[in-house]
Length: 171
Ligand SMILES: [Zn+2]
Image 1 (spheres, rainbow, N blue to C red):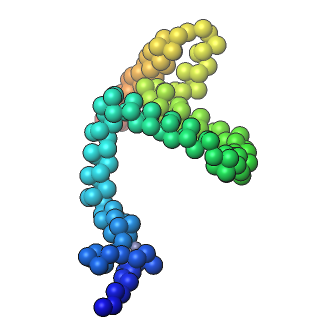
Image 2 (cartoon, rainbow, N blue to C red):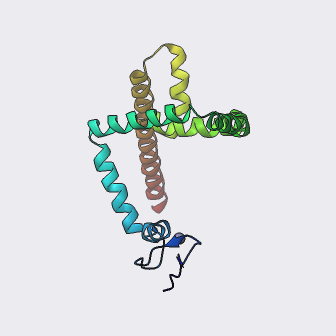
Image 3 (cartoon, helix red, strand yellow):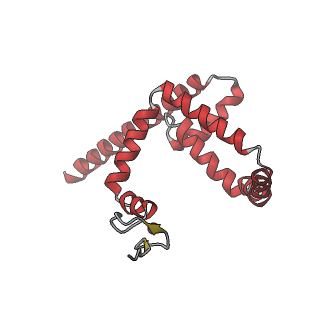
């Protein structure tokens, strides 16, 4: 009797005689490539983590995992090496004027969503006058509404006087 060793179709892993052709890892990789499958898994994970008890348990498990790993000197050394390799370059990246400007713009987009972008400099300038954020927002929005109203009225006057002139010239 010969027992031939079967291997996975995608990798050198050996598989059992009853396997359909792939090791568990490769079979899972194929299943997990499907966007619907991933969306479903993501949705069920979010549902699970919405429960504070489940979330607390997950946190406890990962803290315990890190503590356990920290017993291993090789793991600590790897973490230190990662820190030296990525830590300083990452900090440098966040210090460039360009990245500070980018961060500032996205923070403003969120925090000043209620203040139109064209009014944000004015809004910031009002800080020096000791006004609260709500007062500053109200002030700039009020002023902008007033300016818009004045512009509309000015245009209406200009159109009216242009019509007058045309009428006068027609006779
Ligand atoms: Zn495989």
